[in-house]
Image 1 (spheres, one colour):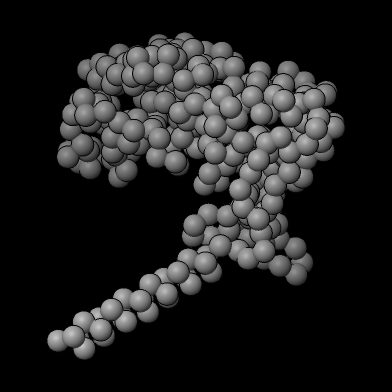
Image 2: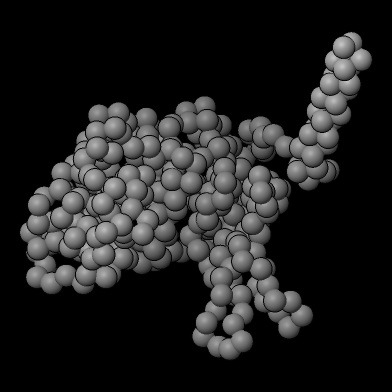
Amino acid sequence: MRITYLYILLSICALSSCSNTEENEIEPSGIKTGYTVPQGNNDFDNDIVKFYDDYGTYLLYRFTDKDAYWTPSKWTNGEPSTDDSQGKLGFIYFEPDENYIKPQLDLLNRTWFNHYSPEFLDKFLPVKILLCSQVQYCNFDFSSYPFKIKGADVPAYYNFDNICVSYAKEDVLNLTTEQETVFEKGINRVFVDCMYGQGKLNTTEVFNASANYSIASAQKTNTALWKIGILQPYYSASPNNDWKQFVTMMICYSEAYLNKDVTTVNEYDTKETSWEGIFSPIKDKNGLLKKRYDMVRQFYIDNYNIDLQLVGNEIYQ
């Protein structure tokens, strides 16, 4: 019996050793982890330290590829196609010019941080915001054949525990109103993706019970779904998805757009274009969409001292 116990103990130790080895192999070797601020002795470093003290989020302008691209399952760096390479889906960051970090921080304050309450930022910001000169998303370009992967400039990109943001470069000094508006809409939409991706857009029991998702798969048209208070297409309907959609509505669109009086319905439009006049009588026949939207809106007012719809009213033009 003692020999049996000894074999069991040795087996457990062996398994534990293998497990530790595998965990170590997941982490890329030779790359330092962990962050400290300030990273330098620039005037703006004091603002970065205060931001961390207030919200627990690192604004980093000196970072590694691992900080940007690593996830537990893979690296997400992209690569445009070339004559010698098919390319790779993902994103690319370009290192910042430290001479333009201060105006980039001013841009982020105007277009992002100032829209939200301190309570909201403290809860929903990611661990890291990586200050880049430019960010590109690498996706298929269908304008020619054979299809190639091409990088396109984007305001920001969310990946795992970080958001990479653009404009730590000279261009930040001469942004037009239109360019700043594009950046503002983009960064706030990425913020929603980040909150959702990190599992922070949690529903409430009352919200979950306010629509019957068990019958959603049988509702093949928008009108049928909207009558029972569900936003998502029938094949992906869930409380979590609807909650995210309502938050996206509030942050990315104005009340005027959502309440617009419309006269027609495209029954199979599952994109955000269907949200134009979503609370009009022809779309929200039973008033359940507005009722559930109000639940989400009031939740953030009560718990995080912010009316998210006011963000959309400011951003959406």
